[in-house]
Image (cartoon, rainbow, N blue to C red; front, side, top):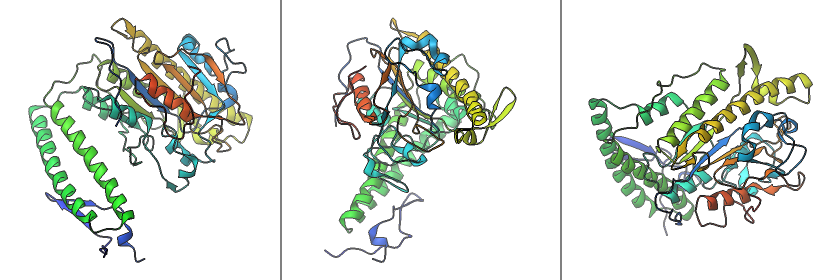
Length: 419
C-alpha cells in the first residue's frame, strides 16, 4: 500500500476553524452499564480528590489498625467522622519515583506505561463511572482544579476548570436572553464544525499507516466526546438552572490555599446537592507560598523537608488545616439529607496523594482515605508497607459499589474485600 506523506502543517478545516492533527509517522522523514437502582432510591455519586504533594506519613497514618485505631495527629482533625471513613496504608500503584506519576493516580495504568515524559495512560475512574452511569444530569462529570487527573478511554487528558467562580456561574447563574441565544448558536456551530472535521479525518485515515491510523483514532475519539458534550449542552441550555441561596463565588487571592480548598469543597457539595452531576474529580495543588494565620509558608519547600524539623512543622501547619477543611466538607455531606439518607451515605469520596514521601519523591505507601458511599468502613486497613497492595484493587471495589459490574480496572489483580 502506498502511504501519503503529510506536512507538519496539515490541518482539518471546517466552518472557518482549523484543528491541528496529532504528530503522525507520515509527517516524519523516516460497553458495560450500571446495574439498575431500585425505584425512588437516591442516586449513587463519586468524588475523587487528589493531593499531588501527598501528606506527611508519620502524622497521617495511625500506629494501630482496625476500627479502634488510635488517631494520628492529622486524623484527629477528622475524629468526628471516624466511623464514616477508612484509611489505607501500604497501598500504591507500584510506580517508580517522581511527580509525573500523579497522572496514574486514578487510572491505575500498568507501571510500564508510567514513564517520565512518555505516559501511555488509560481511562480514569471518574470517566469510567460517568460513561457507564449515563446519569440524567446537566453534566456527566466535572473535572476541577489542576490538570492531569482525568483521562478519557483513549488515555487523553481532560482539561479541568481551574476557577471555582467560573464553575459556580456555569452551574447556578442564569444567563440573559442574549447569552442563551449566543449559547444555542455556539452549540449549533460547534456541531457543524465537528461534522466537517470528522469527515476529513475519516478520509485521511484511509491513506495512512497503522500507527498513524491509531493517532487519528485518538482525534476521532475526542471529536465523538465533544459531540456528546454538545448534545448534552443542547438538551440543557434552555432548562432553568437550580437556585441556591449562596452568593456568587469570587476567586481567592494567590496563596490562600485553605480558602481555595474550602471554596472547591463548597462547590462540590452544591453540585451534588442539586444533582447537577454525580461524578466529580478535584485536583488540589499548590507550589508557592501558603498564607495561614498571617504566616507565609512555602508549601513545596516544606513538603521537600529533607527531614528538617522546622520544615516538617511548617508542612504540618498546612496539612492539618487542609484535613480540617476536608473534615468540614464531610460534615456538610453528612448533614445533607436525601430520601431519608445522608448525601455522604450516597457519595464515595476518595482522598489520595500520588507521593508517599514528597521529600524523597517516593510513590509507595500512598496516603489514601475513602469516606462515605455506603461502605462497611474498617477504620485503618494496614497492608505491607514494603510490598504494597495495588491501589487498582480498591478502584475496582469502588466501581462495584457504584453498581457497575466490573472485576478489573487499571492494573488490578483482585477486588479489595476489606470494605
